[in-house]
Image (cartoon, rainbow, N blue to C red; front, side):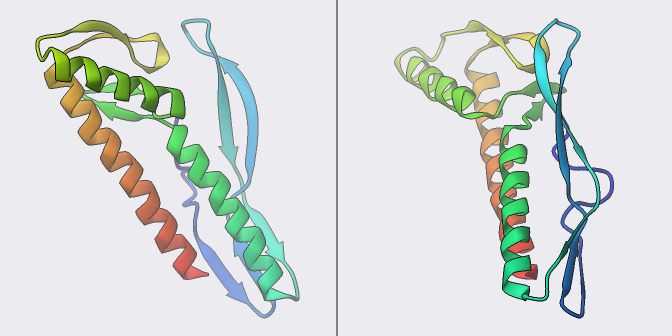
Length: 150
């Protein structure tokens, strides 16, 4: 799943008593090649118009929060394989960390996103965690930057 739209989400334009933000989510479900149903999100242009700028900014902050949540669960790639980044995946990564602490030679078949199977060993796990942490950090850096624009 793509975390960004191609029309530059996060772009703001200010004019007298109006704020414009090109972000609108529509959610639908799509069956992937493995037969699993996944949420699909599309982005369009939205205008937040209000004579009260604080109300408009609150609406934009809500939209940013929605986009943050979408980015958090959009996944991340390691060596060309998409891995999950939702809360259940984070818990599974923590559980796997415990196994590797007890036995660094441990390996297991691991279902990445899109029904792709990999062999998760310590080397791959360390790569996955490094990219996962960067993925999360980048989202909060993006969010802070976007909120500062308001």
